[in-house]
Image 1: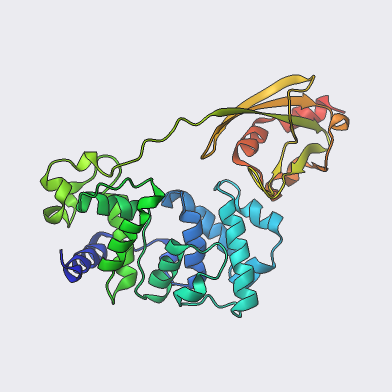
Image 2 (image 1 turned 30 degrees about the vertical axis):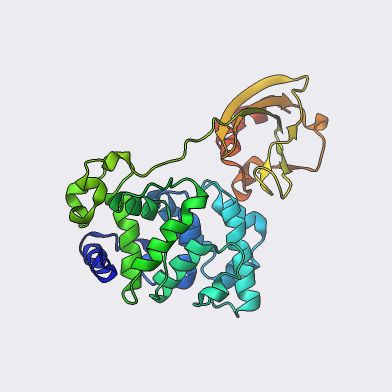
Length: 335
């Protein structure tokens, strides 16, 4: 399919049927694009919208974000998960303020120098903020291309990424890039969905090879994943009427720099109070939470009042666990 024809189809469809009322689309502000794109990585649009709006209320521009303390940044990200994105965004803001006079640059060569901004985010900023030619490839685009061109490449194998980027670069037009990039994402997210794609509504149906061969459901190809192991983690819940003991985790490992219940290497001589499960990319965590007295805990701890918990960046399973606790009952029983 000629690149100009492809771009015209995508742009026309996006204008008529695509998503044009998302909050980060209203001003095409480079900072808004940066924030939204980091939030949208591995997170649904409907989930991101309220977080994006609250984020801009507290951090309305890159200068405000750069000046903020990490703990506050993490607290405002709390619930979105994948906290490395928050640290990347914070680091990017600091670099933009220090090296680019608080102005997010347009050129790809400069954007690539900013920590936390990878190839996709470079393309997104150039396309959405500056309406400049730039290829973008995410899971939606991969799936669309894999079905449209009947590609044999597994979309979850990084060694194959270059094939999808080459296609994206070939089909990226020299004009209307904001609408074209949004059109690719919209087609993948709302039409060429992972399950039960809406082929009848797809403007590319007549050019789609998998549709012509009645094998849409067989694509995209995926590399079979290995079964991930389960590991047990032991955590201490030390509470009294003054608050709960939290410990800031190290900068590396799981939940880096977040505040968490203190973790110990093995089950202590204590009562098992709660259990939780959480899945990381490489293993599943079976968490066991042991009831302990504040005086028996060790390490660099902070006793946080219950009313202040919202101000601390907590891992999602720990936040959910603490939300289940009846603090009034705790205050009455642990004097």
